[in-house]
Image 1 (cartoon, rainbow, N blue to C red):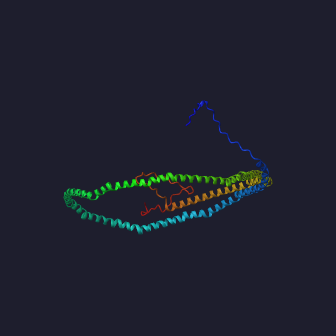
Image 2: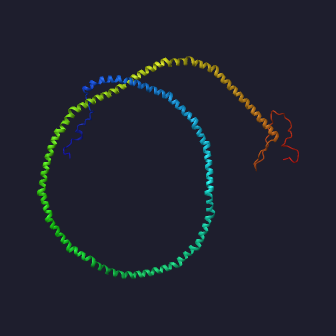
Image 3: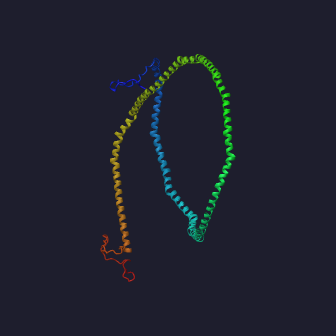
Length: 415
C-alpha cells in the first residue's frame, strides 16, 4: 500500500522520454585490423564479383534470348502436334464412340436385366400380390377381427374380473402371513446380533483401544520427542558442517580456478576472435558492395564500347541505307505489284460472279421451260390475291408463249 501523499497533477514533474542507448565506442583492436582486412578482402573479392556478374549477365542473356524462345517454340510445337490433335481426337472420335458404346451398353443392360424384371413386377407380381392381399384380408383378417371383438374380448373381460377377485383375497391372506414371518425372522436373525454388537463387541473394543494407547502410543511419542529428535538434530548439524566444508573446498579447488580461467583467459581471447570475425565479415560485405560498383562501371564501359563498335554502325546502316532502299522498293515495286494483283483478283471475282449469275439464269430458264412456273400455295380461308405480273426476260424477244408440258389442250391433262 502506498502511504505517501502524492502531489497534485499540476505540480508533478513531466516525465522524460526514454533516451536511445548511446553507441559503444569501438576498441583499438577493431580500428587497427579494419583497414588491412578490408584491403585484402577487396583484392580477393573483386575478381570473384566480376566473374559472378559476367556469369549472371551471360545467364540472363542465354535465358532471355535462347532458352525462353526455344521453350516457347517447343511448347507451340507440342501444342500443335500433340495437344491439338489429341484434343480433336478426344472431342470428335473418342467421345462420340464412347457415348455410342455407353448408350448401346446401357440399352442392352436395361433390355437384359431391368425391363424383364420391371415387366414381371408390374404385370405379374403386383397383380398377384394385390389379389393375394385381398383374399387374405377377406379370409383371415376380417374373420380374425370378428372373432377377437365378438368372442375373445368378452371371455378376456370375465377372466380378468375373476382374477382380480382371487388376487384381492390372496393379498389379504398374504399380508397377515408376511407380518408373522417378518417378526419371526427379526427375532431369530437380527435382534441377537444387534445385542451382541451393542453389549459385547463395542465395550471390549473400547477397552482394547485404551489399553493400546496407554501401552504403545504414549511411549512411542515420548521416545520420538525425547530421544530420536535430538539425535536427528545432531546428525543434521554434523551433515550440514561436512557439506559446508566440502562446498568450500570444491569452490576453491574447482570453481575459483574455472572462473579465473574464463574471466582472464577465455573471455578476452573470445572477444578478440569475435572482433576479428566481425571485422572480416563486415569487410567481406563492404568488399562485395564495392566490387558490385566496380563491376557495374566495367560492365557499362564494355556495353558502351560494344555499342560504339557494333550497334551504332549497324543502326546507321539500317537508318541511312536499308530504310531508304526499303522505302523505294515498297513504293516503287511492292505496292504497284500488290495493287495490280488486287485489281486482277477483283476483276476475276467480278467475271466469275457474272458467269455464275448467267449460269443461274440459264438454269432457271431451262427449269421454267421444262416444268413451268411453280404454283403459289394459298392458305385455307385466305382471300385470293391478284396474280402478280410475271416479269419478261430482257434477253428474250417478245413472242407468244409456246406450248410447254405444263399447258396442254387435251382434256386429260387440263387442270
